[in-house]
Image (cartoon, rainbow, N blue to C red; front, side):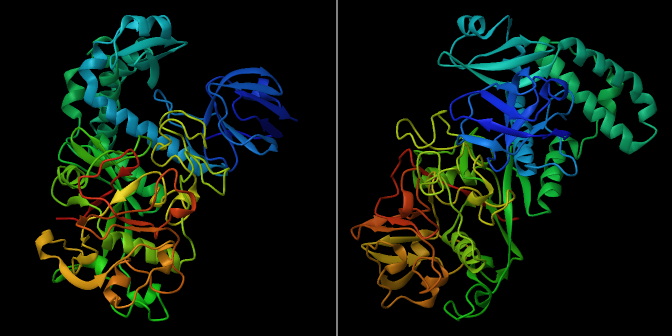
Length: 533
């Protein structure tokens, strides 16, 4: 992405106006370019370039008021979908990558509503579109050379995607059709050209019902890997192979992060966890080289529990429905286990980094400049509304490894259901490894757990080494933050991490064993896992 970053910028929370010092924005910036303050982690778009030292953003600035801030205005985007591009030497590359992934994901998600989009009308402005549609319906508004797709969300227009104009799409598709014969001389070139032609033909069809691409193009379209595998390859390339995309039974992408196998002594050199391979990588008699944990908290889309960025977390869902939604994705998909969580927790603490998160209604309770995008568009820190953030919209410090390729939102936002153990009248029953059996086959640990604040200070008298490796009890030093809540009466299913309002009570150590499996609240969600079947 070509960037203009000469001079400094000043931004004010709640205002779309940005002022510059020693800037020449009239000659170097245009409406539609992106704007990012270094370290903020949020990308905005320029609505207008007013003077050499003033631009107006398309939305009020939601970060912390700052004067003399380093900034970057991005001017490079793909055609026609306007995905932000990255170039050597760019700053805020994590922000650019995250926005690009969200736009790609949004584009894939919209493909399932092709019929509804094709039926959408084109209106001169948002007001007319809202007046002509009902809740949930799509409509287009012309915006310069673009057609902007909106949904009517209870009378509010929510922008979904920007398409090139019908004439541009049609012309590109026709050009791709004419070139398909010569492109077929090279299988690789033909595959790329045909895929691009299909993309533009589909967009034209969605916008206006056009379908003018010749049959020769369709014949040249490869059956695999097709467009969706391009997403997988781009995610793996950007993350150095640490993150990938697996596809569900309904062909929905779901993002996962790889945690490589390690020994217990590797993450607790003092011997607190014993020795040998950690149970997270043991599946009965088999051992896996890694585990795959959802990069994002889960959300239920089309009946499947998927891990995707830029959408609200699934919440108000009980334990059994959470696990069923994950398993509905197909073989290998399931609900995150306590062994998965324990492996991540021990790895983080051994590497000297406990992630932060949304612990104060859209921001971190101490590092208040660290914010995410609230799903209700509310201001960070405002206790009204539902202060959950869009998944992955927080900074790198909210990932398990402090990078944008890490597992996000483990701390705060929503509590996460765990499979693999439970408490019955305070007694811990658990699976012996990561091959989770029926609950009736859980092993009696012989340990009765009790309430403790913080979790790290609980009475662990009589607790076995296994419970320490499982992260159910602390190991005794270098333990994470969080509170333990226990109701020692009846069956209690675990959830971990904390939620949007828990402040210092949230953390990798935070554990609730005080509600039944039927619990369902706006601060309670889940995270999927994947094991290659």
